[in-house]
Image: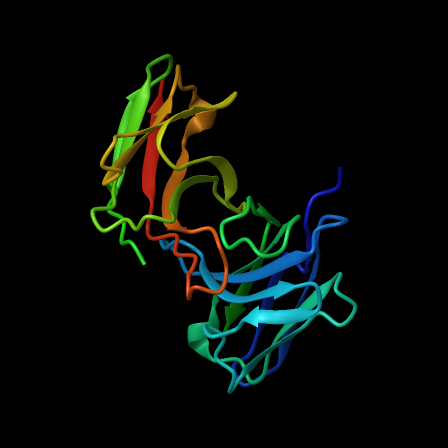
Length: 116
Length: 113
């Protein structure tokens, strides 16, 4: 079974530039999560989708971050414009069921963003 | 949301049993306890989840005392490949209750020969 796929794996950009990350969850998984992980810290939830609906986006900095999951399958997370403090690893995860906050999550390898 | 406290780091040797304890003094009635493992440059991986008493799977055991104010992840006979960060999460598995998935800083386990 294929795992969660994320691309790109690494991205280096200048500050104030836009950047986008893509995630393809495990087939059949209805819940999708985006996390941000800073060095030495645990992942922090940015947004959670159940199918195509964002059911928890309270942690997403909406002035510069946006996300979409138009057909309830793959998802894109965008930052525009990027700031130096956005340098981190962006993780995508999926889980098979909806309606459970602590369902087993399957994580992708992440995208390491460096903002110069 | 129940706050968790874990040791920052632990050291062990191959073949030993490792027990990592997580304190969660204000755990709520509907809260479950979940543990994840994370290797460098990878996303976290689910290890085990439980509510009370003892849960065992093919990789670990989770011990939860009656008062549920702490839990212990037990890794039998660790190997070098168990070197990783281990996160304890506590929260209501139901959605809609304002539950936030919080990983904390985790415990860095280092296994040596």
